[in-house]
Length: 542
Image (cartoon, rainbow, N blue to C red):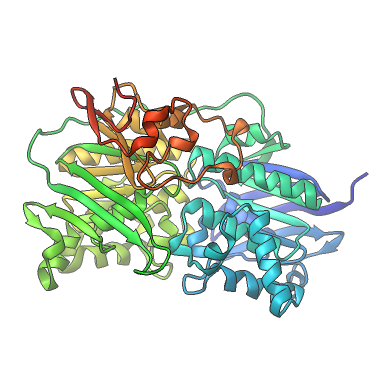
């Protein structure tokens, strides 16, 4: 019989008079695996933090946690367990990684602390870890900073940091919720491969029941504070109607936008390559593409948070990139960004009321209650801090904070990827209602193409900084890459390391395209109109 690695008995957790976990029992054997699922706010992350001895302030808990038969109760009990015993990778690696240290330095620090490695031995260990998590071009990744990597690459760097501790148990808290389907499948396949090779136990926490089923792990659902074995199927679909919109002049227009990451003379990379885009009042436009394709770089450049290398951005008839000083500050308030990680965009020390008042400015007195009502939150939440709310509630607060600035444009960058299906659909329905009511121009960015087709009037598909296809919401995709985004099966996804590198000056999908011919090697085709309102970039366009 396998050794009992982790045992939980009658665990109770709560805030004040609210009980989140009620009498929870759990067992995990050495080298075993277990998936815990449940809706947003069920207490999944709170459970993970409690296991690590990292309860947030104000949490009350009782019960017993045993690690290899030894009781964990006081802070000193966890000191010898965290790291080499159990370690945790988080939902959003951007906030878990140090933004001012290169990937190599962060891995090196972990190896020095937990394995005592120095000098060349440490350098070789860093390379071995990056290779183990299948990151290509080890030298470039090792010298890169977290913001220079895609979401999938950051998640694998965080996994490498965890593996540097040589843990016996890996707690993975919603690690793939912010990734596209292909990257998600590759990361999970990689973790399972490493788990088996290292004989490491795994506790996978996710709100995605279908994903948890596909992994084949024993599955428990956390609901109303109690864990129970899962049976039957559960699916959720967004049934929101796309709002009507006025066919008026664009409120924001992007022309030939180029964004290059890296300094001149170094190994720079073109993240956005000559993109054209128009956003109209009351209209939701979708932007799809796999992790690292340039979606977020485009969004940040449009919002003025990233200086483009070339191109033009026109906001309400003015050259946005030419503005300076007070006019620029006023214009930036007209473009708000709703990020995928509300925990990272909200100040952890600010109450909801303070956060909304700050965003509203001098005219924001008494606005808090109206904004909370608009995003479907109760007034009593105004006194809470971000960690006291569920992921869905935090995202609604982040949306209310955007609305407090009275924007003309809302860029929603993967706003629902970290939410369970029910919360995701509610947020999308709310977003569409607000778009129609306020006549907002919305850019909805997602790796979930089926969701965009249901939600948006128009969808653009991006790969390696290029727009490959642009079509109306109800139209059928034509480009082979766009079709692949609809057909990806997580169970059959190959590892990321198997992707062929794109060749400059050619279609970025060439190395993966099953329809490629000799024509495709002659150069990069322009966007051409397939039919009214449907544009495709492909050499084989009829």
